[in-house]
Amino acid sequence: MTKKSRSRFISKHQDVLQLGAALGFLLLVGLYASLTGADVLGLSGPAVWLLIISAVVGGYMAMNIGANDVANNMGPAVGSGAMTMGWAIVVAAVFEAMGAIVAGGEVVGTIKGGIIDSQQITDATLFAWVMFAALLAGALWLNLATAIGAPVSTTHSIIGAVMGSGIAAGGWGLVNWGTIGSIVVSWLVSPLMGGAIAALFLYIIKHSITYRNEMTEAASRVVPWLIAVMAWAFGSYMLLKGLGQLVKVNFWLAIVLGALFGGAVLLLVRQPVARLARQQVNSKEGVNRLFTWPLVCSAALLSFAHGANDVANAVGPLAAIYEAVIAGAVATKAATPMWVMVLGALGLAAGLALYGARLIRTVGKEITELDNMRAYSIAMAATLTVIVASQLGMPVSTTHISIGAVFGVGFLRELLKVNYAKMEAVVFAGHQGQDRAEVEHYLQRFEAAEVHEKKRMLADMKRRTKDREAVDGAVFAKKEQKALKKAYKQEIVKRSAVLRIVAAWIVTVPATAVLAAILFHMVAAVLG
Image (cartoon, rainbow, N blue to C red):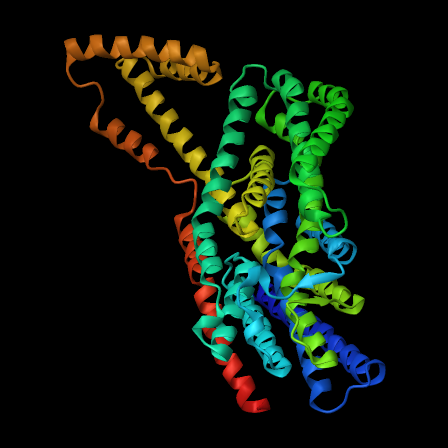
């Protein structure tokens, strides 16, 4: 057997094992739901089957959330090399499950964001069908998105699905269109805000650290402050989002408490970071090592907060179905049994472990090349954007923010590369006709120079170029002009990945709405 054949054989059997493990998990969910329904709740007939199938679909939805959405938290850390894929999956699975169980809350809103007016649905059975169709449609769409390598918003998936099944059940008047409009606006605002903040942080890091002659010395002064800012942002974020179901803290108190936490972290890390910086080589690689543990901690905290918040996308509709089945009630908010929360937590962990690597790789490696400094900027953008959006009442998607931050980092790098290529062109022009070794030596000096020195050298080169043009005419040969033009067009962000992901974002709500409407009519035809 050749190496290529052996690789295909292993890959094929790995797919089979993954599918078998996923089906085994869902089978256990169905078995537990059947025992809960028949033995504990005393249900019988169609009610038991509706609970069993709904629990299986809820587990399926949770698995797809784990496979698709968790990549936003772990992708940058893995892509930068701060964590291996194996450790990322373990850390994310543990913290996602902890977030869902510990901070998921006893009550989960089942109508995400008030998408439909549930008061217009008086029949509990009809309401259960609406939630079931929405849950299945959201899960199927996430499965498809994961298969094609497109990280999409799980929140928007369930929002579109609830809207579609609601329209199918009660007509267009059932939908709160104002809420839908604000969600559409967030498609644009989320990635742009995330991209701008990530690019800003990366720009600050470059100008304060990597554009200096003594990078590690600059890092020893600046990195503790960057870690403190991260601690402030994550402290505030955890109080507002990650622990929001357990501790009710208003926005400004969370900001102040987060600042106190950041100040304490600054005092703790200043000396250790300075000591570690002195041990590093004076290079970008040495600076990157100073960001490793902050990145690992940020990925873990983002996973905890994600588990606490987004588990509702899986167990919220399931909780509504549960309430409709056992009490015959239509509930916009339903008390969630612990077994349902545990189901969501285990589903998140299982989906991540079995299928999460694909999307982690997409976010971390296939859009643009990441290092620890860029991943830090992305983590800060995701956190700060959610904090600002929460205060403004904007329904933003963490997926859109994180991917937008990756785009922002990549496009800033492109801009800086193009500008540097133009500066090199000025240097070449000023040295036209001189020995190649002399030009390369000057370029090395130019690259190592700090920003203010580069400006002085460029001004000198431009004067030299003008003088030579006045005497000799053309400065560049055609071959040199072609090479420089090619350098300007260098693409650091993969456009094909950008287009695929943005297209998936745009169609998520309408696609899940149509799918949910079709599924609702199928359910109504079978059970009605």
